[in-house]
Image 1 (cartoon, rainbow, N blue to C red):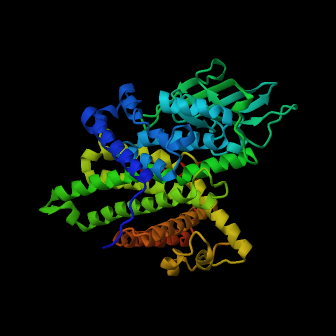
Image 2 (cartoon, one colour):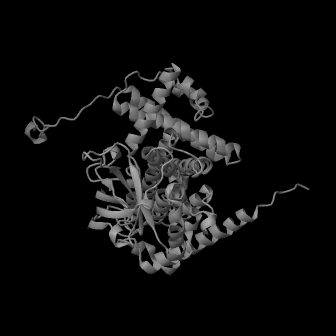
Image 3 (cartoon, rainbow, N blue to C red):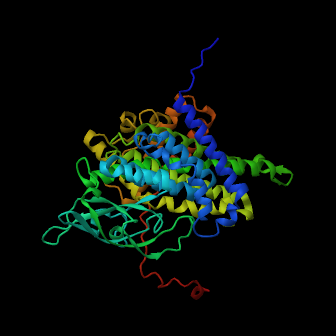
Length: 505
C-alpha cells in the first residue's frame, strides 16, 4: 500500500481557516446581503465589513509572536484570492493592508510599536495603508515634495498625498517624506513614518474625496499632511530609504497575483456556466469556435496567475530582500493586471447585454480591474523598465541575440526554448520608447511562462499548460509583428488643418 504523507497541523489548520473563510464570504455576498445592489453605492456597509473582519482575515499578515498566523505568503495570497472571488474591491482592501502596511511595518517598524499596532488589527479591526503618491508626483516618487524636519523628540511632516486607497478610513498610515536640511533643500533619500489617526497630532486631514470610476468600496481622495510623530515612528531601513521603498513595492507587485487569482477564477467559472447553458441558433455558446477561443484565453490567464502565485509564495516573504527583483516583480504585476482586465472584457462580451451593467459581475469587473494597470506603476512604465534592465544585462554579457541571452538567463532558461523561432532576433541597439514597451511585454511573457513550466513540473494540469503555451506563442508573434512594423507615427498637435471631412464632399 502506498504511504500518503499526512499534512501538518499548521496546514490542516489553515485549510480549515481558509475553507471557512470562503464559505462565510460566499454566504455574506450572495445570501445575507445583495452585493450586486450594494456595489452601486460607495463604501461598504459597516455591518457587512464588520462581519468580514470578525473572521480576522488580516491575521495571516501578523507574526505568530504577536498573535497572528505567521506571515506565510501562501496564506496571504490565499486570503486575497478568496476575497477577490467575491469582490475585487474587498481583495484590494486586504492587499493594501497586507503588502503596503503590515509587511513593511513588520519588517521595518520599531519593535516598541509592534504590540500596540498588531493588537489593534487583531482586536479592534484596525486598517492601515501607504502614502507615497502626490498630486504633482505620481510615478516620479523620487521628487516628492512631502518633507520632514527632525525635532528633539519628534518629526514634523508636511505635504500632500492623494489616491491612497482607504483615504479617511485607515487607522494607521506609512507616510513617505524627504528630509529638509538646514538650507531648506530636500534630500534625495526617502524615509517612512507611522502615523496613528487616534492621536490628535498625527491625524491626517482629508481635503477631498474622489469619485473614482470603479472600486466603489474603497475611498480615495486628497490628503493634507501636517503631523508630528515620535522618534520611534520612523521606519528603520536596513540601508537606505529608497531600498526600503523598492523592497516594499516589489514585494507588493510579486503578490498582486493573489488579488488576480480569485478574480480570474470567478470570471472563468461564470463564463463557463453561462456558455454551457446559453444557446444561439441551436448551439450552446461553448460549442462555437470563437467562444471556445475566448474561454481558453480565460483559462490561460488562470494558469498564468496560478503560476505567479506559486512563484510569489517562494520569493516574496519579508525574510527575503526583493529590492533588486525589479525584472520579475514588474513582469508579474504588469502581465497579471493586463490579463485581469482582458479577462473582464471577455467575460463582459460573453455575457452579452446583461454584462453591460454595473450591478453585473462582468460589468463591475471591467471598471474595477482597469486601475490595476495604472496604480503601483503604470504597466507601460513597468514593461519599459523590464526591457531596459534586460538590455543592460545583455550589454554586460556582450550578447545581442534575445534568444541566446534568454536561454542562459535564470528567469527564462526553461521557457525560452519553447519560443525559440520567435525570439531569435537581435535586441535593437537604440530602440524607441514605444518599442521598449513592446519588448518588455515580450520578455515578461517568457519570464511568467517559466513560472508555468515550474508549476507543471510540480504536477499542475498539463493540458492547461499546453493551452497557455499556445496563447503565449500567439502573443509573442503579434508583439514581434508590432516591433517589425516600424511604426513611428507622431501626433499632430495642431491637427485640424485640412482635417474636416465635410469640406471634402
